[in-house]
Amino acid sequence: MKYIFLALFILFSLAHLYGSFIDDKTIRKYTKGFVLLCLLAYYLLAAGTIKPLIVAALAFSLIGDMLLLGKRFFVLGGVSFAFAHVCFSLAFASGTDFSRIPFVVCLC
Image (cartoon, rainbow, N blue to C red):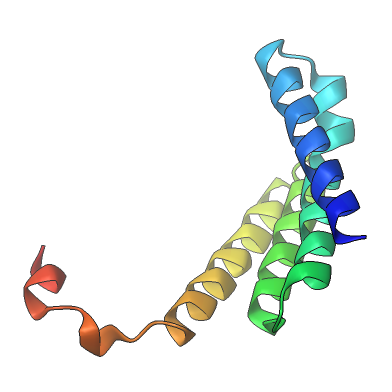
């Protein structure tokens, strides 16, 4: 089942990229939400250990995409993407051993 969602993710992504390439707003409008929905479903089925922060980040990204389809909720879409970025950052930070990073790298 997870490979079905992976295949759908790839197909919707390619369709969305094609819609962007030919500047077809209708194609982009109908594929935008399915890209993240399929990615979220694939993650839930394929991940060994599901991280709630990743699920939240993908959900906020999906909500942000849906809110950005119209101009009326543009600010709320941006806020949703901000929450998604925070969730992605926290998920990354929770699985990273920062003590292994040389201090010199932090100065760059």
